[in-house]
Structures are given as structure tokens and as C-alpha cells.
Amino acid sequence: MRGNDRTGATGAADDGDTAVWVGLGLAEAAAGAQVGAVPLPEIMAGGRRLRRRRRTLVGAVALGTVVVLAGGTMAGLNGASAGRDSVGTIAPAGSGTGGGTGGGPAPDTSGAPTAPPSAAAVRDPFTPSRAVIAQGTAAGKEWKLWIALWPLARQDQAYQQAQAVWQERHAADPELPAPTEAFVQQYWQPQEDVTNTYFTVDGVRLGHDSQGSVPAPSAPATPVDTVGTLSGGLVGHRGKDDTVAPLDVVMAHLDPNTGRVTVTWTDGTTYEPPQVTVGDSPIRWIAVARPEGKTARSWQVYDRNGEKMRGGDYVDFLK
Image (spheres, helix red, strand yellow):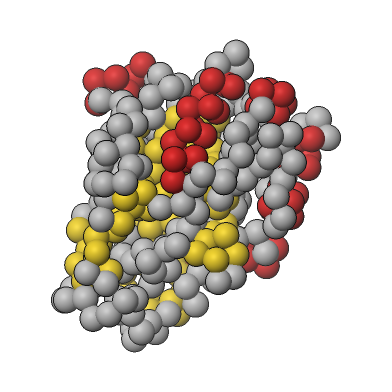
């Protein structure tokens, strides 16, 4: 996942995005080859589909390709909100094809289509499925972290899909350039769904979103990962001191061989984020928010048999 993919009408990357292009392997794509940005991955943003596939947290921090998604907090806390950067209550995240997107000026008024459960098998590339990965309250306001999954489009449909994704993003970020057909066709990925991650606060969609891609259900199986890598990053940031996120939140998707993930905070408490899927995609997502006054001491990744994997040793989020 890569945060806030932005390109101009000619497909040229803005400022700091250039480095991310290379870090995510887009340079390879240009040679003939936006969610993995740790903070992540991405694909096609504003006309460019940044490949968000498997930017692992293993070594990702060292490489400086951490994806910045958009903040909020979600660390299994209880009690009332104590201040601006505190979490009051954390409600369970939703999964599946949830409704409202919060893309308009008032709660759930964007009018963006969302695939109903019965339509999941159709995989309409122009009707995304949505899910809430995390939600809670901060400074007395309700925030939600959403992911919209746009099913794989045929190459002849890719530009139309890119326009539809851009229209949703542009409504919350008027400066986002529109995609060009030439760029979309050049970087079309035949085995990937498009993802768009964003925050809403009191129902209003925020900018600083991120666009990426993940393997579609029809994509060939990948080799079994024995390390326990995570693909994700900090949400809602574009750079240092440039964020609209209410709090620091890390979002990531899990490798198929990963069973669960836990975080140990500096006070000794632990948190295991719930896993969420969207639509018919098998990809499992997690989100972890920094609790007030705490930082992450360590991350642990376990396989499906409950055995500890090495992936957590390389994760440096929220520390």
C-alpha cells in the first residue's frame, strides 16, 4: 500500500512520489516489466496504478519504503477520550461489503456505489466492495478507516475503472490529477485488484488517502512465506508534518501463511488486531493504532499453527 499516489495528466510523479515509484518497483515496470509500501504498496493513483504487492515490513523500514496511510487509533483501549490524541472507545471493525463511504460533506452522503453481498461473485470492476478496518473516537469525534476494493478490470476496462476511482478520490482531494488513458494502459496489471484506503471523521471523507493493489482471487498462488512478512504502513500521511490523520494508525495485510499478529506496548500490555476481509478477496487486513502515552515495544507474527515467525523482528512501526 502506498499512501497518497498522485500523478499529473501526463503520468509524471509529484515531488516525493518519485522515490516511492522506484521503491515500489515501478521503475522495473517502466523498463518492461500505488496499499507494498510499508506504508506500502500501490499502484495507480490519479492515473497511475502503483503496485502495492508485497512491500514487506521485513526490511521495508530499513529501505525507507514505509507507506504512510492515514491515522486514527485502535489499540483495544477502554475508557473515555482524554484529549486530542486519545482514543475513547474502539468498536469492532466491519468486514464484507459494508455501505456508506463518507465521501461527501455530511455523513455517508457520497453516493458511491457499493457492491451488495449477492453481487460479490460478479466482480463488477466498476462497483467496489468496502469494509471498515478499524474505528473509534478521538477528541470526541468518530473516525473510521475504510478500504474500497475495486475488482480486477480487463485491459479494455482499465481506463474507465481508473476514472471511477479518481472521481471518488478527487471529491475529497480536489488537487488530485486525473489519470490518462496512455498511463493506465501502460501500467495495467492483469492479476491485481485495486484498493483505496481512506479515513472518515464524523462521516466526512478525508484526503491523504492511498491507492494500491493486491492479488485478485484468480491470481496464481504465491510461494509459501516462512518469514511472516507484513505489507502495510502508516495511514493518512504524505510526509513529515503533513497529515490529516486523527492519530497514528498502521494498516497492513497478512501473508497467506500468517495466522495472527500481536503488538506488545511499552507498559507490557499486548494487543491482537482483528482480521478483516473485503468482498470476495482472500486478503486479510489489520490495523493498529498507537494508544495515548504508549509506543510499540515489539511485534510478533505467528503462523497458522501458532508458531512464532521471524517477521515481527523486522517491524518498526509505532516505536
